[in-house]
Image 1 (tube, one colour):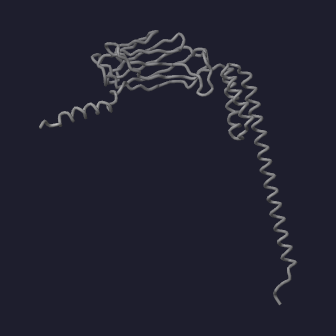
Image 2 (cartoon, one colour):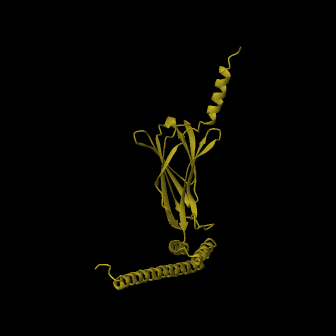
Image 3 (tube, one colour):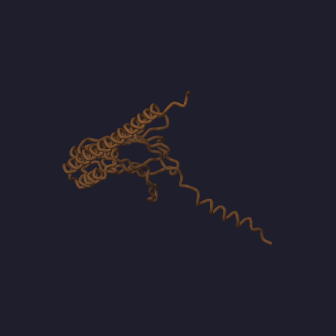
Length: 249
């Protein structure tokens, strides 16, 4: 009778491959990256890459950005922290070779924050500061990291601030009419009608404040009624005890 052990080992090996994740990619971290940037303003972002050769001994670092008039600066360092090379380019495509003694890569991208194509309140609209990709020989690619930045205009920032204030007020008041006005403000924001967004947000905040005051007033009135009832009940109890004949002789 033939042993079934070899077949079992093959099956187990095949199953094991289903649970093995991809090899670790290049490590990337942002060194400087603004949280937001006004449209048309200068933006600088920098990143560091380590663990360069966990998968390939030779590969190409490629980068894309939505910054306008962008310039990339790439600095290569050896294991001792000594700078090997510096490259400045308009389009990032840098070969990384283990034979060159490269241990760490620093990348900086400079440019101008682009215009906003589509406004979004939540999540806020963003542009790509840097998409970094590892391309191996033969053309296989995998993402290293993607970094994004919120961009805005002065008008959109004012509208967002008004909506933020109204949102907080509506949440505290649970006002249905305030929520409807807040939804209208967000819709106006996303359609680039910023003045209408500011007006609707102001109305939503006012409606929420009035609703909250009415609720507080109603709660205060209820408290007064309860207090009066307690005082009245206590007084009646006191009088009844005074009028009751004493059982003591």
